[in-house]
Amino acid sequence: MKGTLWCGACFRRDGSIRRMIVRRTIARNGDEYLYYFCRGTQDGLCDAKYSNLQRIERAVEEHYRTVQFSPDFLQAMRQTLADALADQEASQRALKEQLDGHLARLDAQEANLLDLIGDVTIPRDMIRARLREIGTSRERITAQLNATTDSLTDAIAFIEANLQLLENPYELYLNASDEVRRRLNQAIFKRIFIDHDEIIDHDLEDPLGDLFTVQTIYHATLVGAPPGDLPAIAQHTWNTHHPTKKGAVPKDDSFTSRALKAPAPVQWGAVCSKPHKVGLTGFEPATP
Image (cartoon, rainbow, N blue to C red; front, side, top):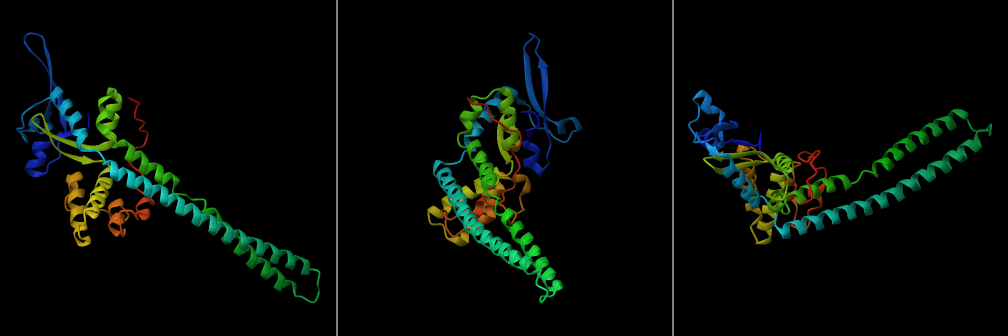
């Protein structure tokens, strides 16, 4: 858990961010005891009690129960992802057919002009100018055609990886090796704040906190929360999972902002486009 644990006493007191470090103690009988303590104690800036390493490890295990997506939200998001991909693929097919038709017409026009080059009654400068126009149009349409190959596939795979990460995180963590646990902690949490053997807060990695906020919007909408209340509800949840950013607001292109603009929980195609792809680089959880 190195690098994940931070002093909850300092953070709760005045918002200070101080790392927890391990201290090894040997009792008179030779038994070894490991504790976490705040770095601030070395400078007289913190008087928090030491936290027993084993109790903190168990607390972290239990904390994984609190960062789990609900089954209905997972189902709704996956359906949204599938629908968004299907809609995009249908639109791309139609656009490709249209652009292919434009290219075919340009090819025909170019062929006709080339046939006219030998006709002395038609100025060659006019033919050359028209051929240049056709070439420019072909380049523009070809660029549009190449752009239609861009797909939501990578973005959807990224979102799905994050959904899977917190589909059943407690069981995943419980059955993981120490190395995979370390990588799970790094992938999910920016910080876990502890105070005297207890976890008092956490700061989630992107985009997990954002997705939890979307889940809150989803559930609030399902139970009939007035649309005007959703921004405040979303902000509260976002602050809960990003306590070190209180006072800030989600970016305009975040999942949260997109979800708030969606007309209904089942119409979230826009939520899936161009996510911030951070947080899971190089992470491959081991199969329990």
